[in-house]
Length: 159
Image 1 (cartoon, rainbow, N blue to C red):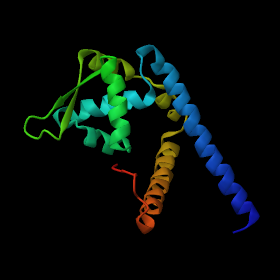
Image 2 (tube, rainbow, N blue to C red):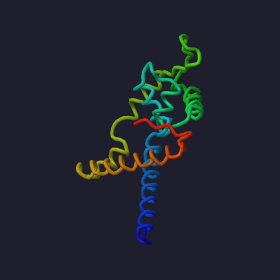
Image 3 (tube, one colour):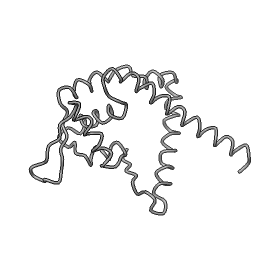
Image 4 (cartoon, rainbow, N blue to C red):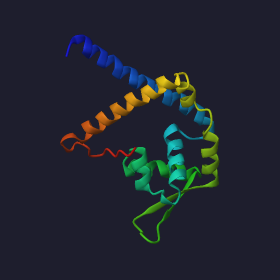
């Protein structure tokens, strides 16, 4: 690998990181009036989609997080009235999660013309499709790297 290749890889990595940071920052600012962060909003949306299959483990899998961090986040959301947790009577080891009315309203209000959509719409449809393909390739390579030699502990990935 040449010095120019190394430099391009480093610049590309920094650019990916910076874009990610800036998009999350913009999204967090627009969600602030709703009282949730980007990650919490994503959790509410996953709970909504999972419906009666919303358990800590299913949510953790979708968010690519470990169950303990999801449980901590759920505690904060429950304390603020966005979700309720109930022990599954059929399997007492399982905890089911449901949106409250406040959680459903927050989900609904967080949709729409988000910063993420506004940013991505700046790309022409063909360019967006190409970006998607490139990111999918990087995602697959990242999966392979994380699963190499059994190094996948703590990484839960489901597309």
